[in-house]
View (cartoon, rainbow, N blue to C red):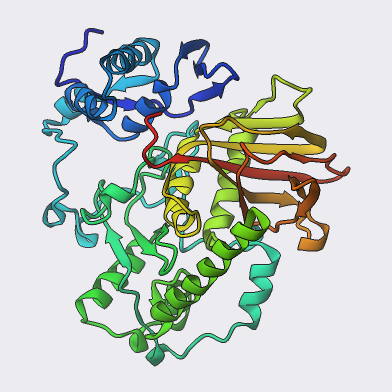
Length: 446
């Protein structure tokens, strides 16, 4: 296909990326492998949302001051498109008669409303071979919510309905596009369920955004709460409980209290990072989101999207997927929190989800020098173990081995390129799923 400046391209989902020691990026698209330089990582991030070729070239020109770098980056863009890693979505817009301007702000006045949404609410209208991430508020299954969160929830006292208010950080989405004021903060939504409506909830103090898919009745309630036509005290207790569990309804002082708590936590983590050279971040993902992420990545693994490690000397009995869309969404949401802890600003660079089977290990190593900070987040574990019994990551600091044990939803932040780290053999009968987030300096060019 011949490209022109107006062609709209978007990154294809389920790409497999491998970065080798010579800084060559291998992008696997179905049965083909495209070999590129590090520019590929920048370009694939640019096209996480639909973008015209002209706009991409302008952004690459602003990013790379040296002419040789600009030429190499543009050549990589064309190589990725020719290899199938970038797909043309212009025709889709032409077929619907819609003019596509990726830089235009979203006008919420043109959104669908809850009243005129059409179509089946069930998942039966979705393609059967597609796997989508969805955290549905009407999901009554509790088995994938981590045990410690279920226990804490059972002990937690729910405020009375007249003591609740609509979270000012909750934003309803009824149309295809996120609310305009959030759009720039929501990349990598390709693998999100197309079902609507949903609500975005921002956590005070971490600035992470979490999506919750709603029934039409739940969305109608959120609309009415926002318009002030009903009050929380007038809600059915079960509906109110679900909205409160997702922090759509909160106590009036809860937002400020949570922001203050995270402020103190981040100050402690910054101090700990200076003395220990690593920081442990506890409970950084909402329990309902964790349950949905566990379900999603288990489905991807069962369908064969996670591939066995090709270097069994380095990492044994491990299956991985690189730069998967939903994993990158999580990484981008965590970025603001990471920047409250690290001494200098960073940006997301690369992610990897790995499932470790019984007998797995990770040999002693250091990471690529361009990744100044690594974050390892436990997404899943079977069986679930308390912190004292969890599979540790070992970090060598000043000649001493530090063992860091994490429960589901916990993460450790450390300088993987500076400090040797590893994992010893995973005991029989256990499996662990980890999300590795790699961060580069905010001003890095690749």
